[in-house]
Length: 238
Image 1 (cartoon, rainbow, N blue to C red):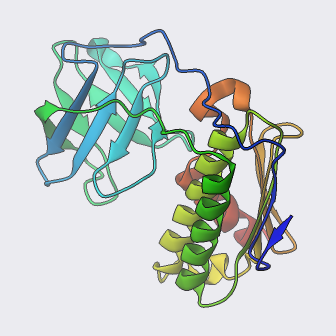
Image 2 (spheres, rainbow, N blue to C red; image 1 turned 135 degrees about the vertical axis):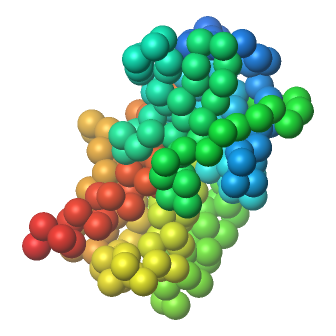
């Protein structure tokens, strides 16, 4: 069904569907499973290590990052996003350093209190349609023209599709605000999210196509950083 030529959504159920929660903690260090932290530069974020994959969300952002822990010298653990960017470094005694574009050399982090887990709220079919249309409007506003969002999914993929659409909108907005990346994102005309096929992110003839894998939970959709890289690399490779 089509909605104002902005979002076409293939949904066969309206009942709420929530993907199974991760149930085993991984790579925990001293400290609570979920807490709010603040870096020396003032950047606040929530880190949730209560599930099988560490999750992170920066304050004033809706995107939840799925982190991949890897061992480092001296027993440290480095957490990277799906784009390979180093986000956190944690020492054996719980010391933490945050790496961002504004602090590429790292900024020390201190715990600032407790926080709620980063599990997503459940959306029903009508709420999802509204959410997709709002994300289309957000991306369209950033570029000054219509960005169509199409979602073609099976029952059980709704929540992950919403996350993928949000990540795509985040990527488009970020690139539109960047003097270095605005030209690259101008090629995007349409965003398509599907759960059919091998997980991937591609850009072809103006269509940004995202294939998600609901079986992998939040790790089954790309981050905005990965989407930015795909769009930029596609243009630079031409």
